[in-house]
Length: 104
Image 1 (cartoon, one colour):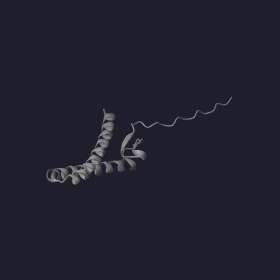
Image 2 (spheres, rainbow, N blue to C red):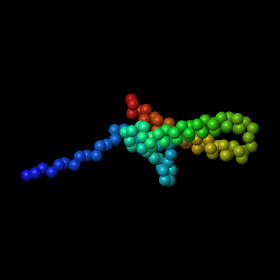
Image 3 (cartoon, rainbow, N blue to C red):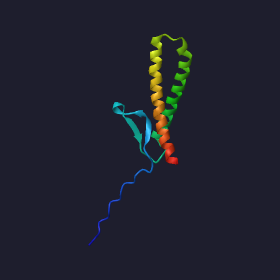
C-alpha cells in the first residue's frame, strides 16, 4: 500500500499584523501581515507615518500662532485639520505600540 504524502501546512507569519496608517473601505483599519519589515508596503507605511506626523507638527505650530487672534470661522477649519492629524497620530501610536510589544 503506497502512502499518500501529507499536504504541507502553509507557513504562518511569525509576527502580529501591522496596523497601517491609512484606512480601507468605509474607514475600516488596514493591516499588513509580513515577516519582512523592509518590504515595499512596510516602507510605504513608514513614509506615510512620517508625513502624517510631520503634518500634525505643522498644524500644531499653526494653531499655536493662529488661535489667540482668530475669528471663529477659521478656527473650525483648523480644528477639523487638527482632528484629522490627531486621528492619524493615534493610529500610528497604536501601530508602533503593537510592534514594540512584540520585542518584549
